[in-house]
Image 1 (cartoon, rainbow, N blue to C red):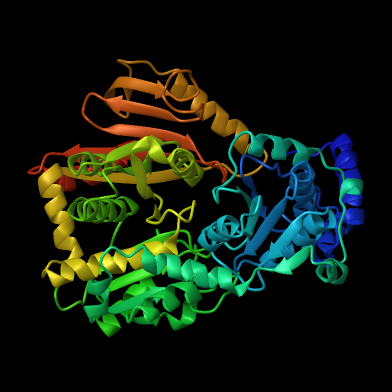
Image 2 (image 1 turned 180 degrees about the horizontal axis):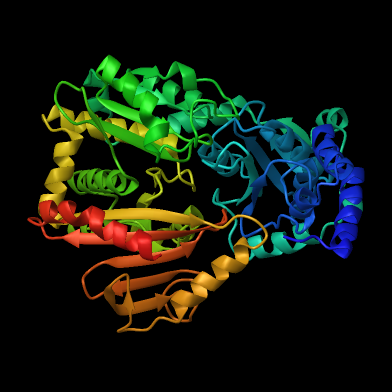
Length: 572
């Protein structure tokens, strides 16, 4: 784009102010070099806007500038959080961080701002997963929590997520008020403390070791059939994808007597993620080394977790000699876990006559709902984002006499929760639950693949395809808004992707049963369902295609799946 002289002047003023406010030399130097080289396009991209603190935090490219995540931006939003917490008596917070570049530094400067503002602050000494932060907030009865992470994003990203006292990501009214305060903070408002003085005063401390021990014990206590694991002789291949899952996942499985081997090249924390393009267990490429290890050791199950260990990937043997493996989709994992937990709950008599509740995102397979309803449970659909699942959990905690208990939460994007003491997706406890599930079926001579086939035979075959379109840069938001407006102009009877629209549900409208959200659900007379949703954390629009056939229709659907998906991808 053409950068006018007035734009140059405005950007230069912002850049000079940023340099005077940024404490990290590397970030200052990036901006100073761009000024020296008169790289106006680079400077404009760094300063044309500021990363906003959204409904649960912020995420952005690491680097210098207000449109990047850096020490200054972390201190700025933390001051806003501190301003909100100071209005609460005896407020406290727990801070964790993952293996990404600058995560430790960002967590440290956030701790100095919170403690410097008089907020009792617990800071982990070592990297820890998201679920263990969620557990720690609840265990320590803290008011809030922070995790420095960008989850499964490429290495150039980092982020900052805020949690509330229930252990879930912040929801209204807290998120709205924190965002207002954070986005209004000026550089001169930021109040840092001195670490030595803060630690000496006791207002800043390390998270006690007993919190980790309590988490591990909680996961062990959550096992439905612990005797099955104790008797099992199985092998697990595992990759933490250079992230935080290495110690907790291996420790848990080893303590249970499971033989687990880790992918050596991906064992140690590394924010550059040198062995993968994208550190996401959804990706076949990211899981390839773990599957190679699985073949080598003849693993009974292959596990992978993302850098902050809130997403779990699973691969299972396709044949008895374990020479080929199938990478399960998030919906297949959700289906298997929901089925196992619901059937087990029914067999074991549940909890005092209460009905088990399964909570899933609206873009997760409806097969989970069918399984829940057949096995005496209830299934609740919520908006995408695990905080909405946590919100349903909190409602039960607040009303124990409601006649329900939380059993399982799931998102198609590899997020699962099988315990009540964590209020975010948890790849650590879910990995343990998945191994227990596999051991149970193995004790009956059944593989996970065979169990999945049996589920399809009972409920009908379901499959889902997810793809996205990226819209980077300054014009990306405008393009995304225009595309969503185009979908909103469609009506029943119109044609899209060569199919007749049967119904359209716009979640920005009133009375949909969901909170208002930028989501559109389109059902076609041919049976397909399409969900269109802009990502809340990345500059992209995600498309979810749902297809279902009867028990005998699997082969026919698989044969035409590529054609159906090709139609959608070429038209959207």
